[in-house]
Image 1 (cartoon, rainbow, N blue to C red):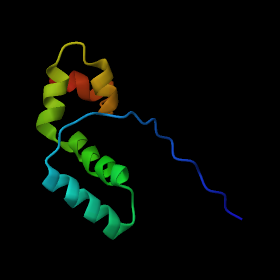
Image 2 (image 1 turned 90 degrees about the vertical axis):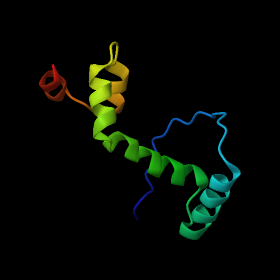
Image 3 (image 1 turned 60 degrees about the vertical axis):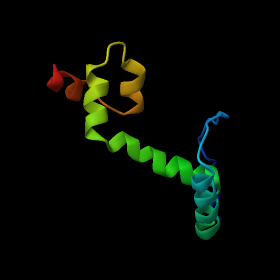
Amino acid sequence: MQFMIPKDRKLKKVNWEVPERLIDLVEAYSEYINYSESEVIEYYLNFIQEDEDFRAWALKKRNNKKLLKLLEIDDAEETMVE
């Protein structure tokens, strides 16, 4: 028997204002793919990490250690920008 592996997620409730149209879209899409709305949002927001302009901006930002860790930018990438 293969046991299920628990999801390693720390969840935090946020209070954002999002257009109703997008909420309805996420609700419908989550129903279509049979995932929770939170999982759909998490999946698509993870693509922010791939924005090269955002990554370059993060490297130039002062006191950016936490952000670099979130973006999984290592020391080699960091020294290439300097």
